[in-house]
Amino acid sequence: MLLQIADCLEASDLEAVVETAARADFTSGENTAGRVARTVKHNLQAEDSAEIRGLLELVERRLRANPLVQSVARPMAFVKLLLSRYEPGMAYGSHVDNALMKGQRTDLSFTLLLSDPASYEGGELVMEDSSGERAWKPAAGSLLLYPSTTLHRVEEVTRGERLAVVGWIQSRVRSAEQRELLFDLERAMSSEYDARGKTNQYDRLSKCFNNLLRRWLD
Image 1: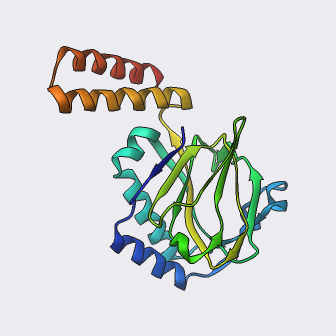
Image 2: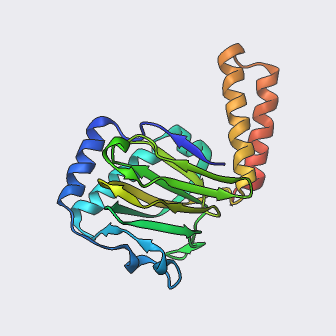
């Protein structure tokens, strides 16, 4: 399941993150790519510093506090976060993210866009599957959350600058199909409760949700 979540950062947070990024030093993204990915990864990544660590910690706190992120991803750990920048001529060809990072399984990947889409051309995040391709270029502060098994790419930026935080999550529920079922059940529970309160129907949905969660948790 791929989900777009708007306004994951408040305006003040987004402004602070962008200002910090403007002061950061960047290096070639090839430095953190594997032997094959290095051939198609052409972007920049922020070098480690106290300011960048603070920026990424802020983003992680905001995502951990987001109810939709919690419901969709059920995070056990945020494995890794990076601040990336694409300038004109830069792109990241088709690839699948590594299954292991820092010795931890990657179940979900995310891209948190920091740049106003009107400020740059190109740079769409394209998801590929058996049904075709779909391109995404959401508003600044929006998050794209998707299974790490997805083949995807970033189109070439032809004008301006595309700034984003990318990261990976290890979920408490390994299976993408199970996570989606739990998400749908939780939404059904919420709708039932909001409409009619704690009914027999709500109790049955709650029983299914909690017993499935108990069965599927790592």
